[in-house]
Image 1 (cartoon, rainbow, N blue to C red):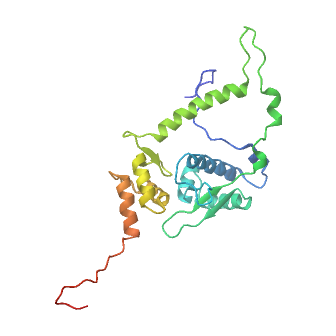
Image 2: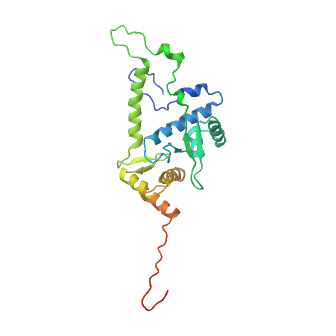
Image 3: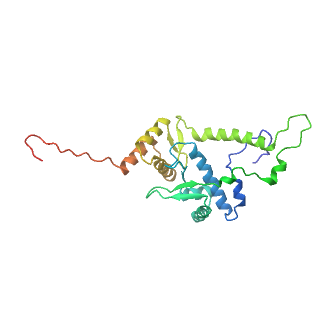
Length: 239
């Protein structure tokens, strides 16, 4: 069942489609939608600590298998679209080693930040209403509704029962602020472990009672503490 939009209708969850993609003739529709999804994920990374590299560049993790499931496309179609985006210099992929997904850096043309659509500019303002009400532009009204909906979505996606924040591609790794700070201090490359745990739980259906403890355990398994050797001996013994 669908409904007609009214002035007070909430806007369904959406992703921002960059206008400059409309002029990218070298990209098919799959590549354009894929870029929109990657850009949306990068915006989440902007708002959370630990998702920038040494140069301050924001990165994301989004395995090809997960992208294929999200877009309902084959993995080959996703690979082709990723290659097309990389050819257009809209993304950069960096390998992270065996067992870890590639880092994906989303890029954009700076000159398009102030781009507007000339074709709809003449329709930005509605006809003056006859009941004396103040005229409200279509753009302003849409932005107002969109901001309210975006705030509701943000609260829903970022909070859990225990006040923990959701992380990972599947938003299923829950960490408190204190736990995240501890992981930042104790676990090298902790964002990779968050992503690895998120993908593993989503694919296997397995759950863990403490996600911070699980990440520490995996990190210790991969990088065990060095054994401290002692060269002391008793008085009647020699080295």
